[in-house]
Image (cartoon, rainbow, N blue to C red):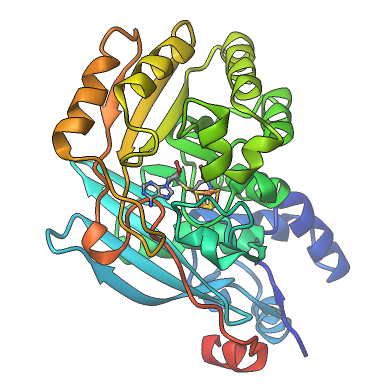
Length: 353
Ligand code: SAH
Ligand code: SF4
């Protein structure tokens, strides 16, 4: 029998579940607290749930949606890459970064990614499938247990295009930000998108309080379409128009990411165009020198990165150069890629229980 996986259920779903089981409603609150606040490792740890119900849970359900299969640490120790194995044998990665008193986790939302940006290793995998809310949440809960300390910041910038898995991601983030759950601060959660405009509009419409980042990566549609194919559908002007509306209506700043690819989008002309484009938009800019992948491309020389940065000086917005962490273990932006095994759900399940 295929067991159900409870991780990922929100309160309403847990209430429906306990009702079906003929259990009182307060069991749903207990399960929610045990799964998300106390982050129990097993049903047996849920000490105020009746022994009989715990037994039934063991028989019919599983608690975890994922399992840490391997951990790699960068040479300087400030970054760890966690490889997760999912029930169907698929794998995704998350990256844990230690910085001062912050612990930032970069999580995945899809196995692979359908967008196929030409500079990104994940893009080569194509889309295998969306992650479930439980698989998204377990990256955080298991990373936290692994680190032995709470995650303070979450960036949804791992494998996949988050906004193409909108419903599952929002369900996961709502649980992660819930005060009876991990209670992550919404403003410490950043969702990064390659520019899926309809979903960005929905995000604004629904008043989501997470931070939004747009991977701009070029200053002309010609170049952007070449490196991010969906630019054909949702071009730069449309994204900038959205950005203005977003900052006006939400009163929040948003972030523009700009991956610097030598000889493609790194000229001073580009920097000046970028400056003109972003002037008047309440934003932050992250310049990300390209991290090597099998896809070719080169990062600009260090001085060229610096010159690009200085050209943006008159922008009244913070600009930072983000030298990715963990490049020596392929944990930098755009370097995450995993093999997907021929589906062996039976074996995977056996290995996890
Ligand atoms: N799919 C989402 C989030 C994941 S990618 C998105 O594209 O926004 C996270 C960031 O890494 C994006 O800004 C993307 O442009 C950047 N990126 C991808 N490949 C990269 C590479 N090889 N070097 C540096 N940054 C890269
Ligand atoms: Fe997908 Fe983001 Fe990589 Fe583009 S950069 S292929 S959207 S993960």
